[in-house]
Image 1 (cartoon, helix red, strand yellow):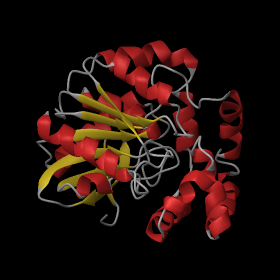
Image 2 (cartoon, one colour; image 1 turned 90 degrees about the vertical axis):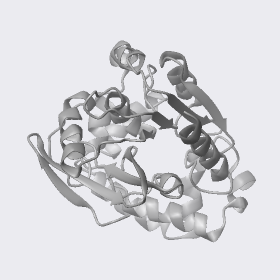
Image 3 (cartoon, helix red, strand yellow; image 1 turned 120 degrees about the horizontal axis):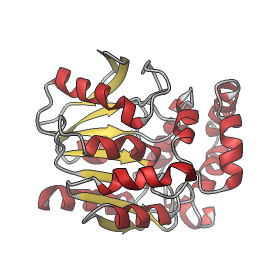
Image 4 (cartoon, one colour; image 1 turned 180 degrees about the horizontal axis):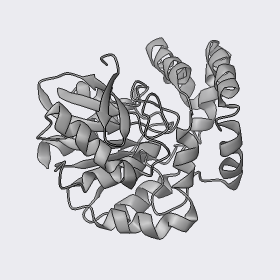
Length: 288
């Protein structure tokens, strides 16, 4: 990934990061706690020869547009695409909470994306986070006032093997000893780097405000407007986002294709099972 850059729009500055490659670009929206620079699986697309343009969504990184909703942020996304001269978008990709922005982007007539891909996406029409405890604690633990202390503690924890294992364990519904040995050192370093580069800033609170039960009908309306071919991937072993969201996305988006991955964790792009996600993406991009 190239060094991040700033594109100035009428709404404010938007931070992006790019991977240059010969193939048509994908617009990549990372999940919660992630700026454009955090690797949330964009390597799957770069490895298939696609250039990647990753965005820091409102509240994350150096994007300075205020606490805009995903729909309110759309003019800035369209401006970035115009400024970069992007005229043929192979796919819009949303990972986890990045689905919030990917969904309206896929429906933009100005962008004209050919496909939509949601990996372990949330929220669907269902509220997210999935548990009441997470919905209550999230704004506190990862709120602007103490999130720096939270992430400093997570960074220290990620520095040890046992700490990294403890951080990854809740991202799976399987016993950690069942899948942790399959991760090579390279896989563990990728997870460690991810945790060390994550930050909530104001973005996570902004995500939470858009993902409650009260806006479920609005999200359904957005999903039903999607007209491009859509791939939904998720894992029944994902401890970060319930597989029910993938099923709900597939039911709400006309003609969407659902692929159940064998990934043992929310981090579908890490570990030997990442091959199944790569194959699903390759097949979808080459046959639709």
